[in-house]
Image 1: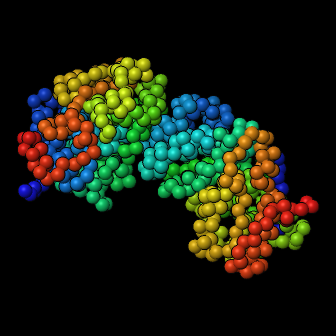
Image 2: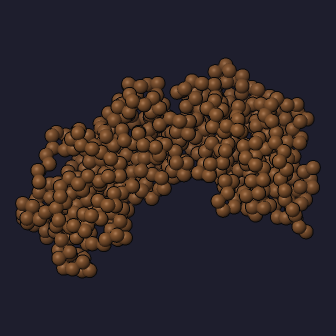
Image 3: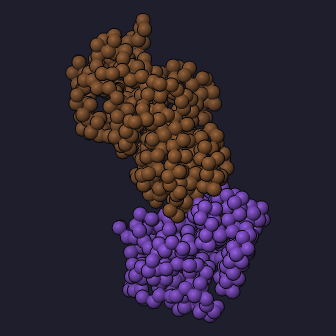
Length: 291
Length: 338
């Protein structure tokens, strides 16, 4: 069995959308993830597939201000993928937003590629705001960005950040939470990809981080719990964040309940898909499901 | 050669604090991150003058480091300062990945460095951070010799682009560099010329080296060259190699472990370019302990006397032929009767 991989050059606009418009977007992104990973022969499948709806609404729903033809636009909003191992979904979204050619998704994890295994600022890939991958650090960098806008410059920019739930076992994550809550960074939106999976097993079995809602509330966050695959709920959560920001309220934490590997039947909710790519056969099956 | 004299005593931390204020006046992008020890590391001067550009994150050095990165990636020039014991190790991964790999324009002020933090004891006496920091790609690492130089180095750090770490101390130490002296990052200062032994030092050990050079001249008519190697990275290869060629033997002196610090940096340069007998003055693979700052420097062998003795030993090895194997002699043999 052989598999020929091609990436369409389809690009999506960033605008207010109906629920139904996301089907094509999420399918395209999930296919990108599978294709780039099967070519890379290493990398993380589960997390990227699980966060696809959330990140699609964020980038293509008009919630974040950015300009692919001017990636360093001074008044852009910022996005930090603190869970850097989920890079394949970020690369797909950036390519589909028009930051760089979709063909480049073929180069994931190859030598000298701008698509490093974990995002690397040194490769100057448009749309990447920081290197990330050492867990707990990206979210703290995002807090620093939010402070720059909220405390120093007092402008309207927003900062979005995605962490995993296993990542919350890193103590540095809570230092970041403490700082964001204490400084009431209302321009900061922390999204927790709550799939309850990490490399060794279920988060609740390895080292429980629960209860999350109460933890973040006690750290001075507005907490919104959602089904991370339900477009309406995701949109409502980002709308609520915008309201919090406008009212200069507390920082927002969106706890997105997701399934690792969502969209591919044999990967769904399987923690052993945290850090593995599909082989060719598995990729063919996965792609046949993603139609 | 005019003898270099001191003109009073001040802590290098004061130089850092005042340098920050000077920077703050010149450059609105300067932001300072406080980690609860602002009075100790003198970022309080900046805080009192520019409260709107001072952000406190509490006793959380990991977060302070990465928050600084976020600010740098937003176009600010952030300084984070704490004690070196916590500003270089607690946050080591943050420095490696988020500052250096990102090549983020973050400046760290590492205060209370070395043994001379004194009575606080070993937990607070950082003696290893130079070894770590100088291995990091993109890092600039500076250890100034006195108040005036600390101030200039702080300003120079703020004006350069890229990650930088300033290593400074707590106690009052002799001031001998002048306000009109140049300070250039990466350019070592030759404070005294000589051709018998080259003494390369930084931090508080520069002053001790000058005293040792006087003693060598007075007692043995030895002409020592004294180099203030304030920048450990990038190191001034030309100054070191030229001095090695001229003197044929070298001693390094630092308030740090003898392993991996200035000693290692200089030895790497000479091993590759011009190998000569070398001796190292520093803390000998041990932790410190409580005591008064300059009681500890005596006890742990960080004074002019060890530099003096090590110079004689290095010269003896040179005179026995450059390939001679180091004879193990106790420092006391050379300082007997002094």
